[in-house]
Length: 90
Image (cartoon, rainbow, N blue to C red; front, side, top):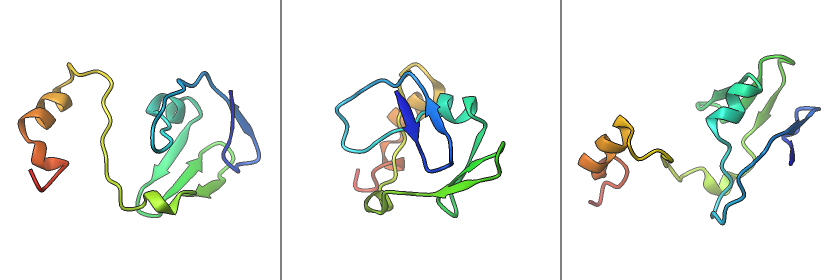
């Protein structure tokens, strides 16, 4: 599949297609294409071309989340031990 992020180039990648409520781009993709993520300004920066693209889905602005595929990582253990990190109502 080829992804067009509005950075003048298309980015071919073997994506995992999943039934999710919002799109997810993995760190492996970001590292492979040498992108930088500017969280404060909600931008994706291409270090090679010096171009950037603003966050495209404002409906997701207030959704904070952490996704783990490998449930044997130390981060998974921390999140299991302290669920209030992600959900203050817990």
